[in-house]
Length: 233
Length: 110
Image (tube, rainbow over all chains, first blue to last red):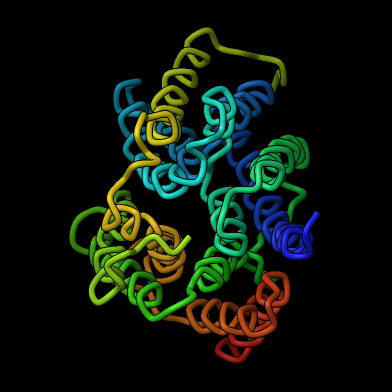
């Protein structure tokens, strides 16, 4: 194993520890929230294991609790998770030589956090590292599902995360990994414009579409003045 | 509450939601020809990571239930991200953000 691969995997491992903190907190809150909305442990775990999409799971619980129809729930989840198409498209050129069956399985694990870990790992190596990609996905899937169960079982015994500052862990994780992906001025422009357009979209259009809009428009700012070759991977 | 209760209508709903979610994640990975994308498309794709993750962080910090929210969270998350980048450690950045937001909230409340 090359020194670069060893160093990149070590960094991936360290980054994943930070992501675990975020996942365990949010997953525990999800389990508790689902119980409050009268979902059983099996139903709550089913959402985490089968749907496996944090924000959308909160939306499902909220909509079900509010008596929304099936159609509304399904459309809302699909819209919320449309941003995952951007994630997959972003790493797709690196996975082209992997067998289709492997790509199909990796796709299931491609959440916000797994994408953050995987794309940072790819940026360090300049290529995909399959064991690293599996690790990134499973290091989200396993703690998310365990935390869901713990949150459902622990229920009201849990403290409010905001009282001890843990409510900033998720945005801090996303911001930290976003900044680690900035290797040049073009990427910095993409980050800044994506963030600003997402805030504007949340205020002017719909908060549920904000990340998708920011993720779609931000890269355009990055491309302005970027080298024409573009594919520095 | 019965922990093993599974309402017959809920499983198909979860599966339907999951199918659309999986399609969004899988279609770009399984589409033929991704290795032959033109350079401008590859350049665009390279910037999706910072743009989308920045968008997630920004909306989580700046958008509240009633609109724009500017407070200690933004300072803590921004400072944590910068320190994490400087120290090349996400964990240090997270710890900084958590410590800072606790201090700032206590200061504001005092």
